[in-house]
Amino acid sequence: MKYLYRIVNALFAAAVFPAALFLDGILLRASTSLFDYGLEERFTFMRIINIFLGKETFFGIPYEPGVTTWPEAFNPMAGRLIASIVFFAITLAIAIFIFFWSVFSNKRLPIAIASASGIVTMIVSTACFKAATDMLINGSINIVNAFTDGWIASLLGGIVNIDRLEFGGFQNGILICFIFILAWTGAYYLIEVGSNEEKVKKHN
Image (cartoon, rainbow, N blue to C red):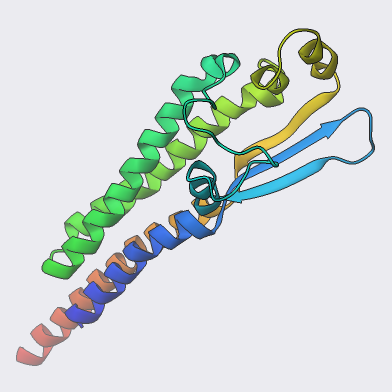
């Protein structure tokens, strides 16, 4: 039973990474007052990586190292985005810890603490990302200013709106993995306690 417990923990910890890479990473929905329909696009993090590697384009615009730079218009949201990335990285580090701890140790308390911490860090990462992108949605930052200057930005700024910009769902997959590990650890502990009580009753 102990080996089954460890194997299941390791599998769900490892599942965090395909969830992060292949489930919808970013959901973008934009609209314009010129047309009745808007634009919705979902990006997996694997696709975002491919964009930076030059294998794919962003709405037909290729990423060019040294040419494509961080827009100054986005500076007010930089701190919150960095916080989101840091907590996301911590979440992945926790998954790695759970995987290797499950492989090499039977102790359950570190697994319970780590899985609970993974839930918290993923929620905080999501909240930080939302706090950053809310600036684009409520108009505090005009996304048009990131790509154009001068009169073009002034003209398009009033007719191009970002309606949604958020994590696309991968975070739910990661949360499910950590929640399952935490619940599985709790269930295993209860089963073990019950088994020990049965043994005590038999001896008495």
